[in-house]
Structures are given as structure tokens and as C-alpha cells.
Length: 255
Image 1 (cartoon, rainbow, N blue to C red):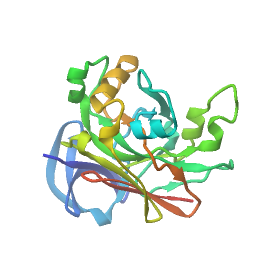
Image 2 (cartoon, rainbow, N blue to C red):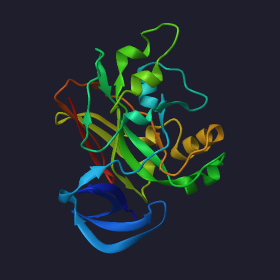
Image 3 (cartoon, rainbow, N blue to C red):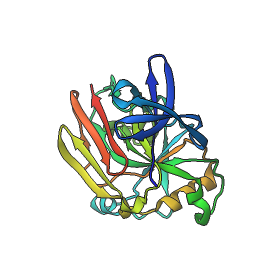
């Protein structure tokens, strides 16, 4: 059975719980290991949503969708190609994506995020899904002009790691089949991306297993699955939303 977990701020205190309609059932303990639902219900409208987990790292994929790879005429990768989004880039649902002081085209990339549920080190594909807690929506914001500005060094981390450049949420949904999910990105009310997760080059199972051979993944860490056709630029004053049925809608202003 699918559950939608979230973190919230109420006054000066923070908490976490399970979304039930327009209310949150407050839980105690640890979201990833033995969370205990209480009798307390809090109206969703009365709290501030926080990023649903606090990752030690967010790993972002490059060239992981057949459709975009073919459009850009990219070589088929033999293994997952990825970078790390810096912690200063993490942003709450409804938070403001801040225009950086540098000039250049700022682009949105709507993505599915895999949320790790327990320590994951050198796991096999067979056991990879045992380490997946659930899924969230994410926007891998990028300053496109920075990427290849210096011919001697591709600046992936800088271009994608600026402050507020990694919003994710609003919840982590458990019990979903990622192969059936569809990512939609909506800019100012207009659908710009609408693509199936099933088009990934490396599946969720493969990503978790292969990345865990390189680095230990911890509960709360997120793997962004990469994006597909429809990536575009946004101007200050825009609202960008990433929507995945079964998870919800991540909405952020760009100012």
C-alpha cells in the first residue's frame, strides 16, 4: 500500500508524518525504521512543508533516457554517468529558486528521485530494491552557460550546485512501481515535459546497485534519475512545477 511521507514545520517545531487527504498523521521515531503513527492530525494547510528527507548527498544522472540521448545524438553510456548536487542547493517545496548573480540561461529539468531507505554498500541488483524507501519529485536546475564555458574543464557541479538549485518533494511516496510513473514539468501553466520513467537506460534497480559499488548510500540520500525531452529555460517570475501521479506536485517560483 502506498504511503506519502512528509516533513513539516509548525510554529517553531518540526515533525514528520503520513499524508491522509488534507491532513497529516503525525508520527514519532524515525521515518526509515519503525516510525510510529500517533493519534494527532495536523491540517496540511496549517503547516510549512519542508524537504521530505535530509540527504547526505543527492546524485544526479546524465544521459539516462533513450529519447533525449537520441535527440542529442549522445553515445550510449556503458555505465551510469553522474554528478553530485551540493547540499546548499537543496530547497524545500514551495521555496524560491533564486536567480544567481551570474548571467546565463537557467534551465529546469523535471526528474524522478529515488530515496534510499537504509545503508546501501556494494549491493547486487537482486537486493537493490530492499534499500529503496520510495520516490519523490525533483528539479535539477542548471545554469547551462557555465557547463562548457571553460574548454579545459566541464563545470557540472558548479552549473548544477548553486544555491536553491535542487528543490525536491513535496513527499516521499512508498509502494510505487517506478516503471509505471510519468514525469510532467509545467512552466507557467504550460506542460513542457511529459515522459515515461520506463524510458530510462538504467533502471532503478541498476542505478542503486551500480552507484553503491562506488559510494555508500545512506538513508535519505536521493538519486535523481535524469531527465528527458522538453528541458527549457525559465525567466525570473516563472513558476515551475514537477508533477508525478502517485507522488504529487513540486512547485517553486524562480525569482
